[in-house]
Structures are given as structure tokens and as C-alpha cells.
Image 1 (tube, one colour):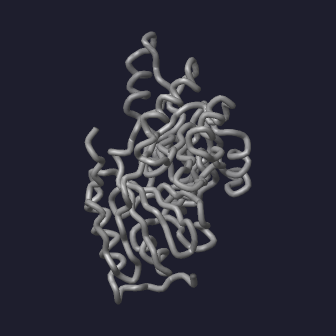
Image 2 (cartoon, helix red, strand yellow; image 1 turned 60 degrees about the vertical axis):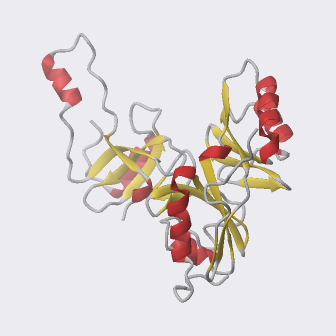
Image 3 (cartoon, each protein chain N blue to C red; image 1 turned 90 degrees about the horizontal axis):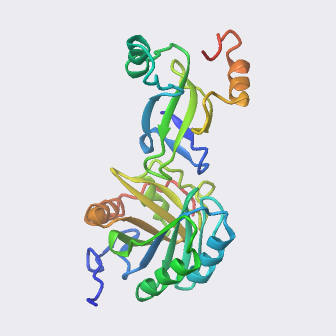
Length: 107
Length: 190
């Protein structure tokens, strides 16, 4: 069972109290972009075996969106952080590096 | 104005914990910048208590205030005082971005009484309801079976549950079934 701590209300929520929002840090391809970029934005998602960044909504609680970094293999949670960011904060990256030394990094 | 009617007309169930629908309760949802002094003063004036810290609820007599999310508070007050309180909030917060709505009719409220109330909740929610995880006056927003609910303990023997009015019967049935005599899991020493 996945337990994530909501950074907005500090509650350790069970997975069933949350609504999944898919991959985090997807940036929108704007009007000037080509079809390939737009397809990438709209449809193509990472499906890593290992470290993954996701969006979650605390639906049965404060109702806020947040981001989580976790391992898709072991369900280990490296940390949760605010949704108001474009990339993972340094403390999350440090936590991942400490647990997964050969991780290739956020790209 | 017509008399307020609770969704289940004060239904109650006697099990190893007593489940009772409480009398009509005035509730106001207040959204805005919870750090703003004007809003905090307005909450104190209307709810008779300071806005509590994250995840907490304060009760002061027939009034109270709960922290619901980083930008939302729930004010509890006598039902008859709600219109005046809304007018008071509108005056106090004029010009600042906020939302104050009477949600008394949108909610149902239950009271659980008895030593086994943590057991009753533990059967229905994934939340940590152990004495260490849910101290009195900690407001936990979670779910009861399939629907959203919020609950808090006033002491080790009494708790309140708030849910939406549309699921009042469902939540009452859940709590009653969970509190049925002979089904005590006795998970907690309380």
C-alpha cells in the first residue's frame, strides 16, 4: 500500500484517499510547436522502472495537488513536494541520490 | 424562515458505541488567505476562537473553528446565528479576496460516544486513528468507506463526524454497522 504525506496538510494519506494525476513536470507545447512536440506533450509519457515523479491530488482531504517522487519497483517514497514548481527541489534529488546512487537524474 | 431539519431527523443507534445524529449545526466555509490578520480577526469574532494550527480544530462552547486546508476554514456556530455571521464576515473582509458560504444544509453531523469509538472509525477509514495518531481536537479529513468525511475526538470517549448531507444515511448505516455489539475488534487501549 502506498502512503504519501501531503505537503499541504501534512497528513500521511493512504493511496485510496488520493487521486492520481499521472506524470509530473510535463510542460505544455505551445501554439508555435510542431506536431511532434505536441504529441509528446499530449500523449507520450515516461514509464520508468525505478524513480518516477508523479502528481497526486489529496481528494479525500484538503483537495490540493502535490508532487511525489517514488520508486515504481519497490514503492519506496523519496519525498513529496509542492505542485508549484517546474522541477524537483534539491532536497528530493538528494534523497533519491542517497538511495539510488546510479540513478541517471531527472531529465 | 422554515425550521432547519437534519437529514435523518436525529436518528441514533445503540451499539458498543452510540451513534447519534446531532441537532442542526450552523457551518460556514471560509476560504481566503488564512495568514491575513483581517481574516484571523474575523474568525475570532464569528467563531469565538482563534484560527487553529494546521490540522486542528478548536471548540469554544457552542462555537468553533477548524483548519480544513491551506486556504479553507470551517466555522461552527449556532444555526440561528449564521446569517448575522455571514454579514459580519462580509463587512470585515470587504475588499479582500475571500469566500464565505453557509454550508449548514449541505452537511450532516454525527456524534460517537463510547470507549470503542476508535474501533468504529478504524473499521471504516484508512486514517491512523490510534491514540498516537489522532489526539483529541485533531481534525482528520479522510474517507469512511466510499465517501469523504472529517472527524475529530473531543475526548477519548466522544467524537464527531461530518459528512455531506447526500450521504448521511449511508454514513449513519456504516457507523451503525461498525458499532454493532459483538463486533468489537478492540484494537486500541483507550
